[in-house]
Length: 181
Image 1 (tube, rainbow, N blue to C red):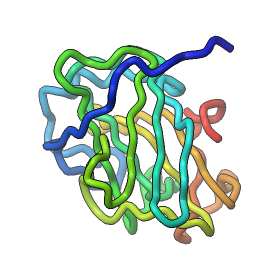
Image 2: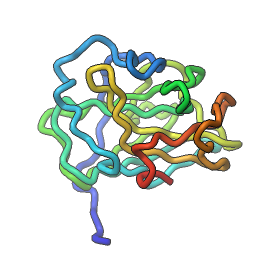
Image 3: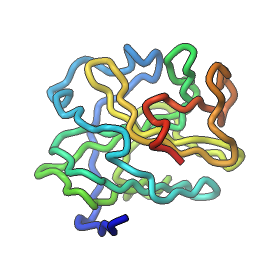
Image 4: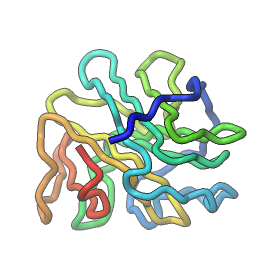
């Protein structure tokens, strides 16, 4: 595989719209001018590092250029395949691509409580559990959730049909079958 090096120093960005996590078809706030920027496909972003204990952290590598104004969401809410919804007991973080966009190879960071994260709280309480949790990256596009990448720790993704109702559990969205860790 080719090596991709970060070429942009991450910066803190805020002001992203709030999101409500359930159900998926109504998860998006009202339509925004940035909805046309929902162009990411599964695997266009990759979580390249994460830390669940103590200070929670994760890093996201862009494998494609990101357009100015595009919004990327990260949640630790579990996905429930049977109802096509998120468990609404955890949190959502948001990142809005800055003016000029970001080139492929850029890194975006989240560090809990640091005040210097690229991702900012959008709703709920984003708190990763070292006894089992997940991070799902996605975009909301016209009321439809577009999954981009997912990672889980300590527990495997729940099997299809398992309700994933307990904290720290999640089904793997079908679109991420080959784009997850």
